[in-house]
Length: 272
Image 1 (spheres, helix red, strand yellow):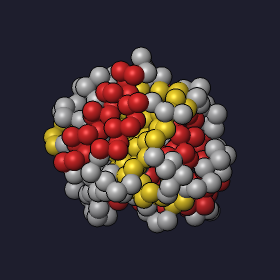
Image 2: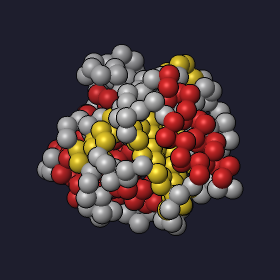
Image 3: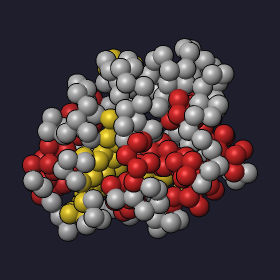
């Protein structure tokens, strides 16, 4: 299967890359590159961790508005990057809910909270709650729930299809997760500068009118997803009813900011 637009990854300045597009009904429209190759996900780990948190919520193990993380913060704050925790340090730099402070530490505290609530190590809970049911057999969490996932394009297509047409979760839970949490909150989108507002759902970044951005100029404002510093991204555009995954072996930098939006716009144009 192939979309001509996906062949653009052949021109990316990376050693290895793979990409694919999947419809909301699970139909794979095209793929390019070694879709079975395992790549470090970096922060594309976070949507997987967030989905496991939502499973824990639906199972009754946790509540979104129960205390978690630093004093005054909740599970919701941790998922929405408004707990006040620093980026990569377990120290508080702002009151909960005041600023959008993107935080790996927040997701690590979220993982610890779920592990204590379920009496299951978070990596194992993620496997049982999300990876195994979706057949994501090539995906593992090898450390921090913020950034240490390893996966393949083929596996992430299963996840992207699930998020578009949920089977593991009530669709209303997923819809809420893709709704802006703490509207109007300002913050820095790492790699793209200050955004006002810097909108996020529960573990997923929401595009809205952000500029500059790693998705395309033709991406709908409702587009949500995540990118990773290992040169990876996953976006879902509800208006286009499709998702795109791209994984590479080169760290995020100016090269990615240049070519990712071009690929996204080409995919959206070709699939209209």
